[in-house]
Image (cartoon, rainbow, N blue to C red):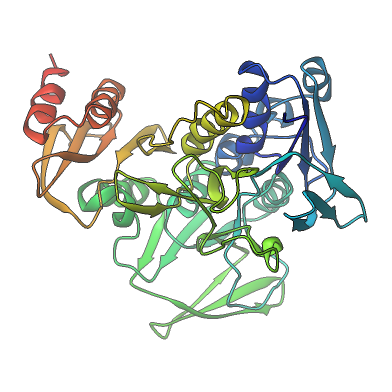
Length: 406
C-alpha cells in the first residue's frame, strides 16, 4: 500500500499531480519538493503579462501554503534533489536531507539550453520567476533589447518588450523560426505582425560572439555585422532537467524514459510528468517528449490516477495542444502540424487584415488529420482538437471547421 508519494518539482506538473492525487482519493502522504524558494507559480505569464508588469506574483501563483495544507499537501521548497536511490527508495537533497518514498514522481521540468556565449551582465534567460523579475527590471531601465532565438519564448518576449516601448531586434539562424511549430503560413503572419509593430527581424543570421562595450553589449553576427544593444534575451531552447538522475540506473535519453502509463521503464514506483518525461506514445509508435503546459496538466492527472488506482492503469495518449499570445493575437496549435508525415494542408478563414481569423489544417499520407493551427479562432481549434481525438479523417475535419464559420 502506498503511504508516501514524493513529487520532485514544484511547477505545474508537480502541483497538478499532488492535487490530482487528492482528487483521485489518495489518502497517503503527499510531499512536493521544489528547488526554488518561491511558492509554486505558473510559467506562461513570465514572458507576457508578468514580464510586462500587468500581473503580480499573486496572479501567477499555483497554490499557497494554506491551500496546500488544507488538502494535506506538504511543500518543501528551496532544496534541490541531487540523487535518487531507486533500490533504497529515497531521494538525497543538496541540503543533506534524505527523503524516503513509496512512490516518486519526477517533475523537474526543463532548463534553458546552455549558452555558447560569454555569461555577461545584461544577458538574460527566461525560465524562472526570478529570471522574469530580473529581465523586467532591465527592460524598465533600457531602451533597446536584442532577442536571440525566434521561437515561442523569444517571439513572446519581443512582443512584450515592444509593447513596453523598447526598440527590439530578433535574431535567428533560421529564415522563418516559428515554421518549426506553426508551419510556414502562420509563421510568416507572425513575422509580419512583428514588423507592423516595429520589431526588426534578422533571420538567417547567427551570433558569433557577445561582448561588453561600456554599458552596452556588442553582438557580432555571422553576416559580418555588429549589433549594439542595451540588453540581450536568450531564447535558444531548453533541455530536460534530468542531469541529477545520472548514476541512478534509471533510463535517461533526452528525458526520463517511461512506458505508456508514464511509469519509468523497469519501475512500478517511479513516474515522470511534464517536460522531463519521455513516454511511449502508441499514436506515434515511439517515445515523445512535449514541452507544453497542457501536456504537463493532463499528464499529471493521468499519473495521479495510475498511482491511486494501480490495478486500473490508464495509458497517457493526450493530443498535443499549445497556445501563444502575440500583441492582441492568440495562436493555438493542436496535434503535430509540422510532423514528418504531413502530406497536405488547407487554409480556412481569412488571414488578411489587422486581426485575421483563420486556420490551417494538416493531413498525413493516410488521409487523417494530424495537426491544426488557428489564429484568433477558438471555435475552430476546439473542433480540431475533438477531430484529432476521434481520429477523424482529414476531409471530414476540414468540412467541420469550415462549418464553424457559419
